[in-house]
Length: 253
Image (cartoon, rainbow, N blue to C red; front, side):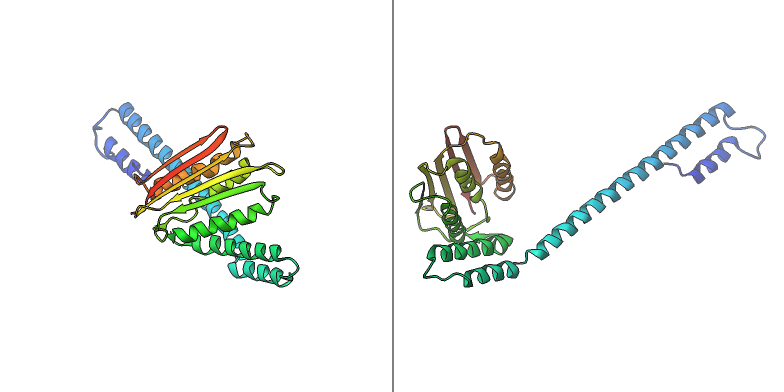
């Protein structure tokens, strides 16, 4: 695009100032000049608007990043662990062993979420332990035999590496939509680890709450993570009607 200086230089050339005969008719020259001048102004304005938009977006991004950093600073791992340990010290194990166990499970959950999930990969054994701790804490909300969770593991390849947090969304949904107080509910969770470098995860439970609009975000996020991390190496099937069924296979290598 022409700059304003170039336009004036062009105008001088077109009109051949200092020459007796112009190279082009005046009307044509003025038309060409007006066209390029208008294009140059429009280009400059557009570029300025885009620049302002980029600056505004960057400011918004910086603001969100600052807010996130402040939030993270308030939730440093040592702070959470110190609070949990202080609360645990206030409880007498002999008087309330269930509460002591709950604090310990919560501490383990917090440590895993804050520390282990920052790693690129974790062992499947740690991921399953995380699920077991989560299930134990969820069961505190129910009386005995109200929420029955059958977690079964078959196979010896439990130490293979996996992206952290891929299974928790499905277990969360099972408790959220498949359990109710004063009713018996069953959640079946199965890990098939009989084949090296392959994980098969199955989960089945009856749906007791049919408003499933809230579970779509978590599942869709998990789908996106699987597509990014295990492209062409996974298969996820989710069915929810009267029952909520999940079948996920992952090739870890």
